[in-house]
Each structure stands twice: as C-alpha cells, then as structure tokens.
Image (cartoon, rainbow, N blue to C red):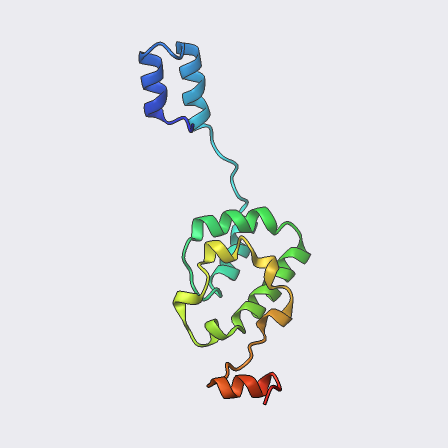
Length: 136
C-alpha cells in the first residue's frame, strides 16, 4: 500500500504508527526527488519539440533522463525519432495511432532499426492479396 498523508494520519490516530514513525513517513513523502540537470532538460526539449504527438511531457522527460546517458544515446534517440517519423501513421498524421510522447520515450530504442519504418501497401482486395502471395 502506498503511504499517503491521509493514511499516515489515520494510522497515527488509530495507534498503528508511533509519532516517530509517522514523522519519518511524512519526511519520506516530502523528501526532494533527484533533479534533472539543465543540460539533460535542454537536450530533451530539442527532441521533444520534434516529436509528432507531444502528450505526457513529464513522463517523457523522466524516461529520457533515465535512458539517455551518453552522447551516443543522444545520437541514437535522434536516429530513432527520424525512423519513427518515417512510419506510415506519422507521415499520414493519424494521431490516434501515433504513440504519446510518454510511451515513445519509454521505448525509443525499439525504433533504432530502420527496417521498422518500411510500410507495405495494403492490398485492395482478396484477389490482390492472393496475387501478392503468388496463389493465383
């Protein structure tokens, strides 16, 4: 169970936590989180502004900071974004099929392989499908 301020207060009032335990739990909740360096934020912003569906910026930044540690990682994420932007859904602007930024930045390494961007024209009919499979 995640400790919330409400849970801590109720647990303290009901005698499940001592004053010291409740104080320590509250201090843990308000402890400052690791900050992200301005350099990382700057690099993120440059990539973020190029991303086609900028939804979930806070999570995207968190994923970026966790996965982009070296200059090579930064080069790789740029290449991955170039590859993703070449996909059919992005080119056609089908926003409902474009990943939110928070999701893409969590899985950007999946897009390093340029072969994922190839899209084959969908057959227009069952006959074309059979021809494509050389069954006619």
